[in-house]
Length: 621
Image (cartoon, rainbow, N blue to C red):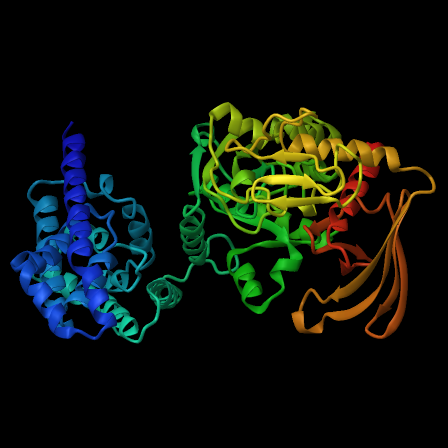
């Protein structure tokens, strides 16, 4: 009961602080920026004077409250102070707020005996860091924490006030430790005013300030963590792991509203293998956040991990590189090693992003690997991610995402199943249809241009059966040959139409049936292409070329020139289990352990190549 009352009080305080921030921006910041454009400094002074003492008091109040309730970022009010006042005055106001907030926290913890762990999600993280640096004094540890911007001032104060430290040392540490971040934010605010006076658009200034803050604070935090809290570099235990998770969380939540149903995971101990469908680029974030605080080594496409920065990050957090749809013994060895060291694994066995809002069959051999690993397997579904970030659409959309457990296979269950039975079980349990998910839950997607990019996926008109005649206009798909139209509504389904096609998944399957009818012993799809032979260790060593790609029911091949040399090769269809591609741009496959990217003259053919390979492999199943 006491905890609930405390939370209600803190919630009210947070609302008050947010109200003051809104008032501050409405009555001061907007007009200050307007006057700054015309260099009217006298008008700025008069504006501040008109607001009276409350404009000064508001800085102090919000700075203090944000420390007590923890959840409000301090940077908002510090930037506002830097915009509105002389840097020295702004710093004094913010420091006064820190003094009041820190003193209040000390009183709450030491007199009222408030349990700070119930108020701050950061308490566990701070305790873990404190355990690693147990040789440091509380003051020294607090100073280090103040240099890690991802941890709020208030959380550090709650931690310090709960330890055996005098109030005098505690308050001195809080005020001096917070000062560098306060000064940085104030000068960023002052920089915004200066850039405004130079005529730079406001949206550009905001982007610049955000970029500078991210680079500055992240660099500082990584430096401090690496020097003082160096974890297991080269594994998911690296201190970089939660930092990247936070960064991705910020990016993802600007559009998606994810919900994680973790209740079935509470009784699983030790390392696990997390498996799910692969609907969007951000699935790695959804998967890692779903099993957190367990950490996992992610199995990812080797191609995207070859740059210098990507390679360093890969090694730092233990990502396991994999060649798509090609035998890769190194991946298996690294996976076995990672599990043996006690790390969980995140695996997307489809090997590619969903094209039509449903799932592909998994790569054969997954079951055999899982039996060899002999750890619990968590099979989950990521629902709705496709609709917020489909493979064929460059811009993301707002939407809801649900990550839920579908099944759990324990080691004793794996022992009783054959590898093929495990594969079948996984295929059954990763099934999704995001369009059904949206309709069932009544979700709405009101953005314009929901159909933009579909011309690179839906390459046949289902009405007249002509290829490459579909064009996009906002939410409408129209055939230039028969003028038949399909309009996507707010539930991401099609409006009523003569062919009764429900959604993109239905549309895609109709095209698939058409393509099956075209395949016979004499079928051959030829395309003029530019080609790139990829060096998986260095981007600058890629070799360029040109020629012709062809696809039959038996093989895929290339004839042409690479790096000035004549080249010809074929890959049998029984070896090529699937074809990875980027919509409207390229398709790719390995030959003799070398990766080739092919860029057709008409990028729309990429989806057709991939579909034919899928159809031929389904026949083998």
